[in-house]
Amino acid sequence: PAQISSFSGSTFKGVICFASPSAVEGFVKEFHKWLPEIEERLTCIVIGETTQRKCEEYFNSVYKSSSQSIESLLQKADY
Image (cartoon, rainbow, N blue to C red; front, side, top):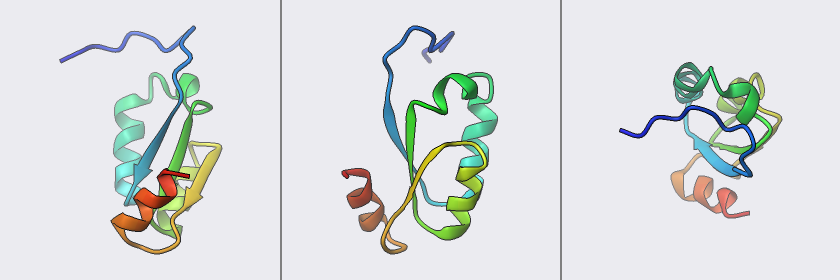
């Protein structure tokens, strides 16, 4: 697998979708080393209020889908 050494100097921006608070926690656990570098570069789309609250603990740009469905999550990600 590819190894990530740094996001410094990168123009990386992206959207990430979360369907549960545990998914947010898992992402943060795996990427905690780079979180200060990537938190400003990611827009988070979440499926519900509980996941939104968890995501807002780590990220600045968080949007909730209009309903609790994968289809709605993906539509919001295509904003």
